[in-house]
Length: 449
Ligand code: G2I
Image 1: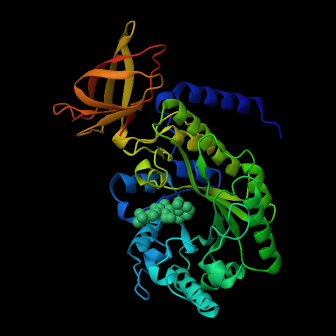
Image 2 (image 1 turned 60 degrees about the vertical axis):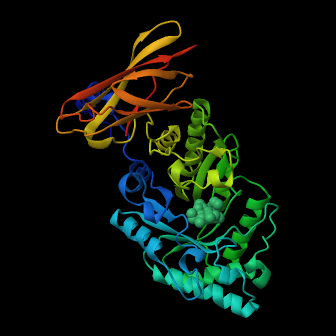
Image 3 (image 1 turned 135 degrees about the horizontal axis):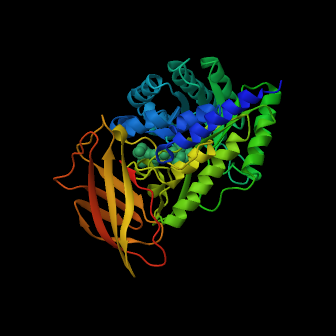
């Protein structure tokens, strides 16, 4: 049916009104979890249970709709001594998720790493080893039966060339340990989606093809398998060009695919150019998942650089996650937002309806004066504040007044002085600085945190 002329006109008037009244400066994207939900996708993060309070807890609750315990559900964490269990941190994460309407991905049941010493140091005849494994699965999956959406049942079974990794499990039980583990997990919680999870399987290569052949054969044999997890511990500049094609080939087998541990690491220091490239790459990875119906979503392996495994494992590398150590969203955050269909132009909600703005008040050959104003809407106020930004063209902060600022590389962080931390409802506080520039002096996006 054709719309009537008056309906079209009414629509145009409504659209025009929207365009005029839309407050572009404040047209913030909703949190990532709302963007993801609108695409019917999960956006998840690995978490540390003991940190789920304060700002870490607020961001976890606000931005994500899936959680994965980073370490809390590994065998070495839950049963450090044979027969003695510690579920404290795992329970805390599951409780937190339920309180905030989030799903949980259990991680991980059968792996070669982070196993308790009593297990790795033991000598186990095959029948006993199999029993230990299936008992462990029955106990752990059974404990959370009905509460977890998915389990990484088997983690990292392959070597880079696509042969089976020689582990406690493979050496003792052969490749059949995988089918045994999946069967035990299905019996313990028939509702949980069962995954095999691995790294360096994001593009089409020997390892991902071995995984492909494995899951195809398991399915053909009737072994319970619902999906594959592509960990996606990526390196800046090396996102595989075949990512979407690879996701699609697993989907075409009738399996779900999840990106389970995304991070994109770089050589430190992080420069504005590297962070901008990282934003593009986060966007591309998320888009590759959004493009495939059976890709269930993307989980980042820690949302803040302060909770990332990278610096410990790869000295000199880091800045791999979407938030910096001070919980300020980095360009990568906006890459995830645009990957999920957002505008990526505005920061996520700041505390209490207050915001910061930046302007260049004066500029000469190699210097300039910058002004930053922190303003609160009526009904909102602050008792202290911090404003951060990243300079895009090598600018450097010098003398500062009415705040104290620190600059590390391109990253600037300024906090209130002792006398202007409180910003009343409808009021503002301003600080200024002299800086240096050369070539260009673009205005950065500032964040109030
Ligand atoms: O290695 C990165 C990930 C690769 N895929 C499987 C994931 O489970 C794995 O996660 C990491 C954790 O993020 C790290 O936090 O697994 C590491 C162990 O292989 C975890 O590191 C361990 C340290 O090695 C321990 O020294 C430390 O006590 O984290 C423990 C808890 O902080």
